[in-house]
Length: 105
Image (tube, rainbow, N blue to C red):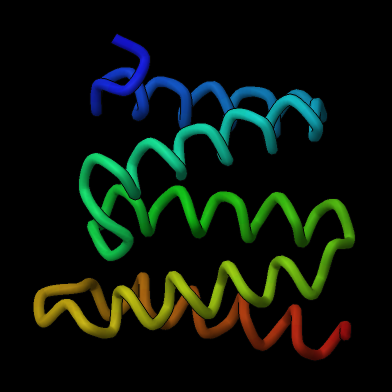
């Protein structure tokens, strides 16, 4: 169904495709849909949810929506920092993304 976690992963991936094609409005729609569903299915701090949060942050940065990008990157960073097994590389990448956005604000 539309809210099944496999469907939500596909919706997120469709957002990636749209973003790569420069279809930003469509990408945002897919990411937001995936995020809402993942929050409901898995919770706000599940790794899959956080991955979509990060994707949305990246999209907002590309669109020049820097305040929104900052919120998403910070949310993803805080979520990953709570996970004892989170990749240090992912955390460092999020810190760099957040710093980049903050320097542009």
